[in-house]
Image (tube, rainbow, N blue to C red; front, side, top):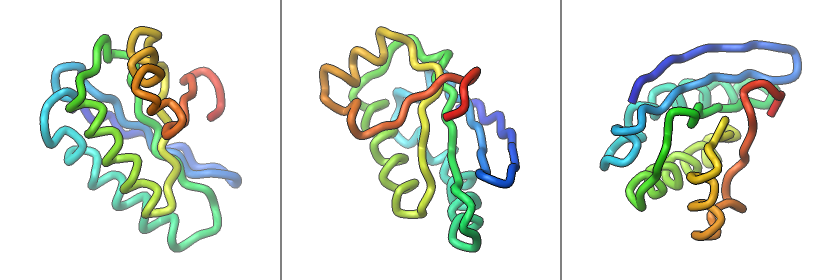
Length: 117
């Protein structure tokens, strides 16, 4: 997982961005690479009233397997437990269709990198 971590701090929210590599997402344990970023964000969220968001850049993901879906489900669950909102950015339509077919679309927040999430 290519982890490009960017921080955007504002009065209304704290956002971190990580990018996922296509080959890595669909392997077991892929979410471990993001867990340190998520843990830091969770600590910050518990210490403040400002909303914290972990944005995951999915623009390079052309396909997703059940393993990749399970990794994202686990990451989303962990984020919620820490009080962090997980947003999947720039999800390609073919990948978004997988979320729709599996009815997982309701579980995730989706956004675009050009728009505020």
